[in-house]
Length: 441
Image (cartoon, rainbow, N blue to C red; front, side, top):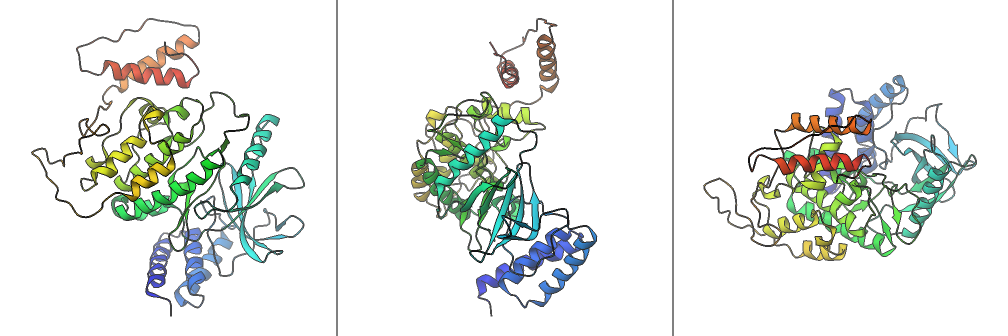
């Protein structure tokens, strides 16, 4: 009989499978059934779900999972589609199932016949890249080889190139899904504080190791953090990694990363720093405890502009029970000036480990808000300066700049009474100008 802890995992996967069946979501049904069978191979419900998923996936020509990195499955899998390879490297890696395709790679669930283990085999996309782009991918892949094995980084078993020159990567499989999925399933998308801190501590340890190897991740986010069946967090997808002690090949001024977690210096195409990863960690920690990223908007430009110009709403606005020490740390991590952030991942880890999560009374004032710890990082009003209600003016200034870049210059003046948002409006324009390669002034 499975232990009580394992049985809870089985029940959760079966509930998700039932929901997927009701929605005719066959890839998810297949995945959840696999997870159950990897823990309880004779589970009758999972066997029924698996059979239904295989029948319908066969009818749908093996629809791929949306995940770019795979999860372990111990049960039989459908044969790979004829459109995909059946093996790699002269038959060493036998393809058992196509797992998914993302912007940078295609991932297959494979069996390594030499070492007799299940692995994820990812082929790196090269279409449309010139020789400089190909060289950059090869150099970044070589840098990843330095990471070796670490308990909080997804292990890369092998890096190389196929017969046609296409790069590939062989990594361990992760059973527990990713942190993005964990957030999506949580009540109000907020993780328990103990769990959020545990994940952040694991990430700090992984970053400590990567930074000691002079490597910067540049794309830390919930979708790139994977979980073992026991809940251990591991950083994955170092596809944007930069080696600090090697010449940079990435085009100067190129913006890379994911906008919701992107540090200001990275958004502006500046030189990446170790503290850039710490900003992304802060954005991720903000989301884990509040249920939303620190900045949201209708488009990427709006979100990036906030990263550059706008202080975040204090996280206790969204979660009043947040310990002041944790709130202060998050706001330090989200400082615009990288020099004001914690110096190292080790410093962040130590701060996280010292946070007291014991219950504390909440002194709710007349405004219904818990007071903040008064220190250098949190002495601003709880709802910091925001930028709303100027969409028309922003669009007018963007249009004026675009016209000027086309040779049709004009004069625009921003005037009005104090406090109506003139400075914020100009900051929005400055961000827009800089992101298009011009000098704001």
